Length: 122
Length: 110
Image (spheres, rainbow over the protein chains, first blue to last red):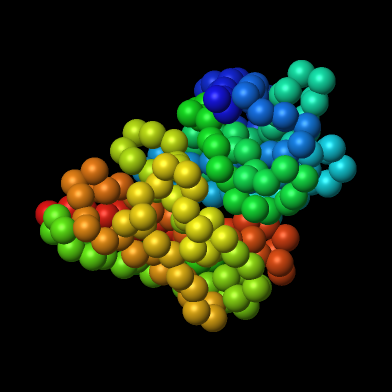
């Protein structure tokens, strides 16, 4: 069974930094592109970033470009999101999501974790 | 303001057929696959439709997707109370080099 478990969400002050993690199991992690998607309280879904299966390519939403960095450790089946210069508008539930097809990019997100809550507040 | 446009709400009675629209542009829906996600209250989103009109294993055939030009639709037939949820469309946008979502449609089963 595919499992994605996010962690690292806390309350942080504006301008602060944070690192989110996602532990993956139940599939061959290094075959799949992985994503971060967020959802502000009471709002819709917003895609944040993706990293290809070998870490060779990364893409970011304009809203986080230059402030967030996505990475992965295939030896530990883990996905990460380094967040810096945090703003109040970054407050959201952050989901880790798996791409649908091995070895492909942008085939949709077929499995999601339960999310980790990041609150940016003074 | 979302790149893809969905109606904020939709409703129907049990047994009815409901459609939810999703409008985009040439750089997203017009040139890439469309995906639909269902989010039940308090839970993570679930893939409902992929590649415009394909259903993952386990998704009821009451759910169907279609696309025409720069717009897409999700149809739910034989509406049930458990279909009450938020529904989101999504597509890759080649101009933005980013995934874009619709703002979501809250479906109420009356």
